[in-house]
Length: 394
Image (cartoon, rainbow, N blue to C red; front, side, top):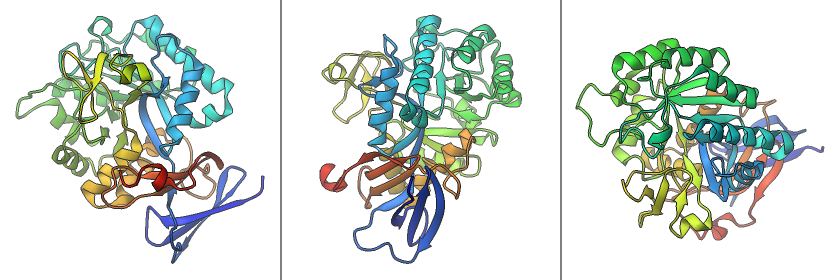
């Protein structure tokens, strides 16, 4: 493979940046004073650690199929995502296992999918059974963690299960945490009503993450203490947050960004599949009966709870950039921060895999707009005139 050079305005620092790519890896990162007129922004590809589905691809399809995961890899690349964790949510044991196997088969059968899929996130089934914290996870399938079931996941997808979300209130949560951590899996606290002591116990056992902090919670909480404050204050927990304009109000998101600045915080999309049948008002595999509200949020018809997001990380980066006034800081929350959670390869440095995002963005845009997306040095998405194709600022 011949070397390729791409350049643009440095999205993570001042001036311009030239990236030299050889054999799918970054061979040089060289700053320049001027990127040139009309140059796109350039930075690392986005990494999403929580994606239930996207467009027609669905990690929770009723009939699991590797083609769903390959479809997710393709459609997410168009939004700048170069690595992601397909996320399997609460269901019957055999259904969850079949979905995990489908992801494993997709990774084995397609080199392109293998490059995009960084592993699997399993969200549930050991979550809160209470309304509010449970979100739209089906009550009928909420159950305590069982080592035997966890082992079936590890056996079905060797080396691929990267994150498991659970609620610390369950008997056996501490033992499950120790088991998973011993097998190289990150344990995340989410969809919980756990007490301070229960949260502390699983953190002491090795839990290191919080799943979409601020969501999957009661509508009303005691002023203090409560499980949100506890996780915000816990220095050993890095928090995923959804910055889609619906899941967290601006003031809440800004407070979380500030509180976790030194502890670790990263963006996730929590995106769900939105096939045509769903967009016309149908059943989602995440939440059942849902509808797209006028404000663009996907909500459960009966409870009004959010049922995942229809936005992707390109929106999350622009949302945080608007809120903080820093594109560089926002981009890091969707690139280097989740990369540090995966901790499986060098990132955005000489020798790292060449996952490169060239994009347009200006203050006030609703999303960053990819021009070209490279995964391991190969073009996964390209638009000749990104801003025109996207209909202008979003």
